[in-house]
Length: 241
Image 1 (cartoon, helix red, strand yellow):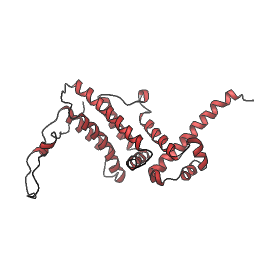
Image 2 (cartoon, one colour):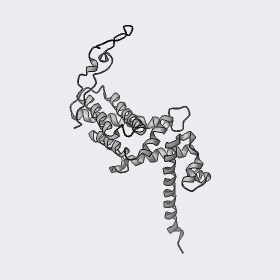
Image 3 (cartoon, helix red, strand yellow):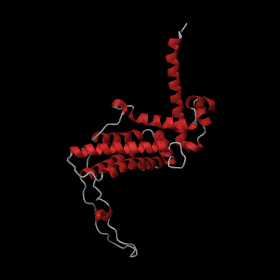
Image 4 (tube, rainbow, N blue to C red):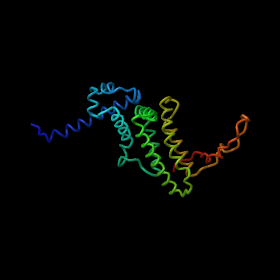
């Protein structure tokens, strides 16, 4: 007879595997239909369970959503040492590699795009998650910029906060364009181009034609505004060192 001490680890492992099956099904369903329109019954059917069975494992639909988001984040760092994103210039290389990885997993990308967009609505259960996630990511990217600036002797750090937010925005925005038209948008290549440009804009900003006076016909009722009057010159692309 198998002793209780030997059976318990097996039961725990089965529970872990069952929960992962549910998370994968929920990730796909939330990505396809959004949180509000995705019924738990549909998720349950995909894993041959009942609605009550899903609640037994996660307690509520809100909790399942948060577990799905955490599961999705863990897949991004599962292959990294210490399961944490690197620092300094390696962080930017990691982001480029992440875009390449995402181009091969449309389902996960779609779920993230749908749920992050939904989270801005009032009362959405994932709002706090995404707010905290973006704050953390901006801080990590800012830290990477600070280290790279220090290594390259860049004293002007005035662009760092904008650059950190811009990198996250361009990655998420390109994912949406790619999901809508994958034949027209090369997710990995466009992401690499944007990250190289933004990093170069912080380390070695160059004058831009956008700062030159406007030419051609314009509505005389509109005041002339040079981009140079309101922002730093936009950089030209340069390779990441």
